[in-house]
Image 1 (spheres, rainbow, N blue to C red):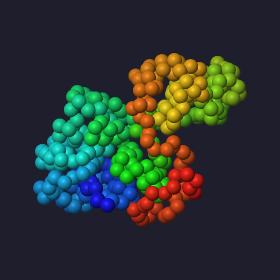
Image 2: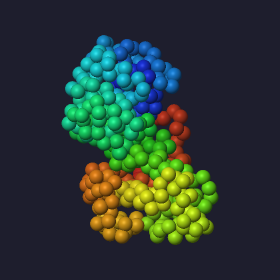
Image 3: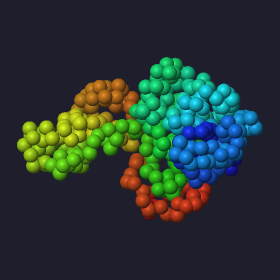
Length: 346
């Protein structure tokens, strides 16, 4: 099997997980030769103080022959994109690479190298406005955790780099190999690119009291159930008016808005993970009709459910529970072989 040459670009102030996460995914899959390049060979300090050794500097590494170029992110990217030698090397390596990828704010270095004109990209949500403001030639979409536009792949922050790397492995070697790597790394296989950076756990506060917690638990247990204020008040053991006030104070949004967001997120997962008709998804998740779901998607996401499914449909099997019992020890991670997808112990 021919090895794919993966070159990671790092710089002072890089985010270490942007490098080590994808690196372990490629190593675990086997068939990848990974190298690290920086402005100069030698130790490179990450934003958290962890040093890694760059085996090459841009002056001594031929950019030709790179199969997959991965630019990591981190606070230091703002200085790195002003490094003319580094930016020129990235542009030269990308010119001949089969594909180019960035993790988190590494997208800024790709933009500085002129690689993103007219492309649709993502990055960490906290840098969305900056990227759109500084690079109007780029179409910025910071909802999904990773995106592919032709041969350019971009991802959101930190752990999303591992999701991106799994998608690259799947693209090269198939979903069985990607599945095996995820199992050995005890990962959730696999978040589709269309999964939002703004999942419920991220965008909402946590309930501070037991009555509101009971209402929230009921919503998540069955998003499609009847969740009007009277029903939620019954779960909470409060009057509807009292629950409305406490729910909004504790979570920052009123109950109806919270219910809608949970339902939208559940419908998004259903659209990307299976073949269920849109009408059935709408009914199952509390939207009553496909038209109601369509209007809600347009209002919240700017696209209809059918387009969302076409754009973000996962090629992997439906996501399941968090895998917590790897078949083999995870240290060290050895290259793995495909494993059966049906009936295997997890």
